[in-house]
Length: 542
Ligand SMILES: [Ca+2]
Ligand SMILES: [Ca+2]
Image (cartoon, rainbow, N blue to C red):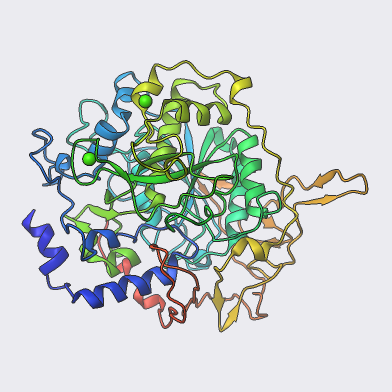
């Protein structure tokens, strides 16, 4: 344990408090604006907090070693999350580990580190990120966020052929039997335009049953600060369409704290908006709270449920941007601490996979109602911030499926005919000094609203913008599967700035927006970062 504290506070990477704060702020400004991300491990090193993520009191109980650590000592280890906080182990013990369920992960890609290399664990969908044109980086997570999510949702060590027998000695996510379908949209800094996320969701809907897949859950640990009404917003429209196609969409509420709107697409009332709880570094539950960074929303649209999201110990992606920038978040060679509603959403995505394994015919509306009906309220916390409370799989396991009628969500549908630019909120990508704004996607193609209103005021909506590997009129991807990997393609189009994409030289991405804590850092921009900063290729991750 001393080693961890040393790395965090006194090691060679330690800085003065002032420098630490500024460093986090800079990094957060760079990326949080669009991805609700893992590197909000800032609370772990915030000066006012206990720097150690170890439980304060006596050990929960003697635990087995996991790569040299005792996971039962960590308030945010997956052992704690699955066996203590959420009760996922009750599902495992009953034989439901998420088998036969595919969880789509639209994020920064995944690298098959130990814990995600289990046979059949990972299907690689298309890479729609700016890095798709870089062969060494295609589909792989250069940032560290997607891999962290993947571990929480469905991690499984090779040795864990019997989940219950190895639950203390192996790394296991919430649904160790589920398979992941990874779609990479974010680059090494998490940079992504909302048009890429919309394209990815549209792809998942179209391909959810390809190759024997059974995509029933979609994890979106992503959100812009759009203020556009969900009925108009094109991102809210497409998540609602995914939901109505039979996919449980789980969206991070946001890391903006109380008093602000949920992030987009959590603003859609149809999806499950997830906030973050924390156990206050104690094992008793009576002092558990909502994490201070967790977005709450408004009386009209607030958090649905919460799940653990503070100092979550998931899989490290050695050499990724987050790993390189935040060595203090590492815990031995395999693990990495991350906080945010991103992590909380991943917990709930895994929970949904367990429920669907148990009840293959359950609908998304019924999954949402079951999770809310069985959740445990945290005393003293706002209903906006916690919704129905912390998910409780022990109770869900033995609770009858809510009937279709009482589960039906009757919100007004989205018509998606608002502005793409408004969906971006304050998050904009930039290339060669040109900022991507307005009604165009990353390829410079004019954005067409999903629906138009006829003279009779009925919405006339496009079914998809994919035609093979083309999306919204230009080529984004390949057209076929090769084994369990979707084929790639070389883009030949032009950017919004009119220059050619021949080789991606994506540097100096500038974000505007707020940090994870909601503090505004106006005038602070991220610049000068280059590919060489993302030196993950030089590291060994096997
Ligand atoms: Ca506690
Ligand atoms: Ca309960």
